[in-house]
Image (cartoon, rainbow, N blue to C red; front, side, top):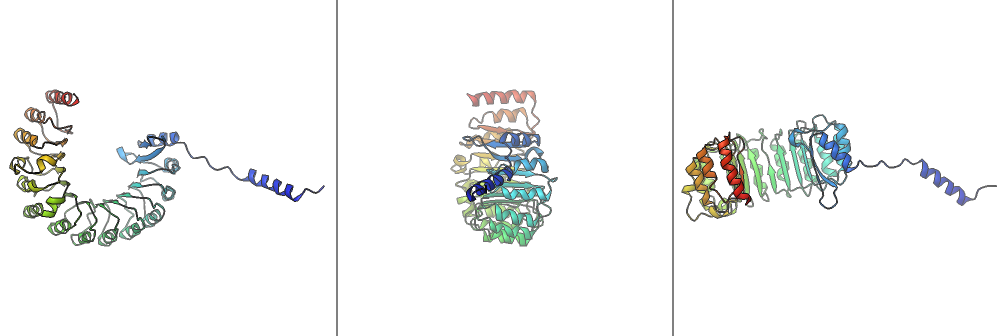
Length: 381
C-alpha cells in the first residue's frame, strides 16, 4: 500500500523536527553570577525580576578570560557591562555585538580595534554611556564610527592616543551631554578648540599640560556647561580669577573639581562667592588651606547651596575647619590623605551638619578614632 500524500508530509515533518538540533540553553543567572564572582567581579539584579542586569568585571582589578566571557554574553537582557580583559581574544570581543540591550558599556585594557568599535556602534543602538580606557589599538579613525550611536549621552575617552581628528569626530556628536577626555595627552591646545562646537555639553572633564588659558577660555564659552573637572592644567592664577568672575560660570555652575594645580589657591577661591548654584566643590592636592571660606561674602549663596566639599591633601588648620560650619547644608566632606591632629579631629566633630565624612589615609591614632566614634554615634541618633 502506498502511503497517502498527507501521511508522507507528516512523516517528513517528524523527521525534520527530530533531526533539528535543540536550541542551546542560556546559562542561568546563577551560573553567570558564580562565574563573575570567581573573576572578582560584581553583579546587580533587577529588584522585581531578580534577573542580572549589570555585570562589572573591571572593578577591584578583576578581569575575564574567553571562557568566563562566553557565559556573560548569554545574558542577552544585560543593561550595563564593565569589562577589563587584556587576555580576551578578538573573537570573544566580537560577541559583544549580541548584547543589543546594553545601555552602558565600559571597556578597559581590551584589544578593541577601529573595526571592532565600528561593528559595535552599528549593533549596540541603545548605548547611552560609553567608556573607552587604555585601548592601545584604537585610533582617531575608529572614533568616527561613534556617529552611529544616536542615543549616546555620556562618553569617556580615557588614556587614549586621541588626536585632533579624533576629537573633531567626537565634536560632531550632537547627542552628547557629558564628555571626559582625561589622560588623552596627545591632544594639543589647538585640538581642544573643537570643543567650541559642542554647545549642548553640560559636563566636561579635561586635564594635562596642554590645557592652558586658551583652552579654558574656549570652555568658558560653552553655553550649557554646569559641571567642570580640570586636572594637571597649566593655567595662570590670574586666568582662574578671570574665569571665576565670568557671569556665565557664576550663574550656571553646579559642580567644580580641580586637582594637582599649584595656581589655584585660597585667594582664587574667594571668587566663588558669587556662584549661585554651586552644590559640589572638589579641591584635590592644591595649595589650599581653606581660608577662602572666611573671606567669602557674608551673603554668599555658597553658604546655603554647597552640599559636597572635597579637600583631599589639604593644609587646613583646626580654625579653618571650624569655618566649614558656615556651610549650613553641607552633607558630605572628604579630607582624605590629609595629615590629622587631635585638634583637627575635634574641629571636625563640631560639624554636626555632616552626614558623610571621609578620612582615608589620614594616619588616625586610637585617640582620634575614639573622638570620631562619638561623632558617628551622634549622627546615628
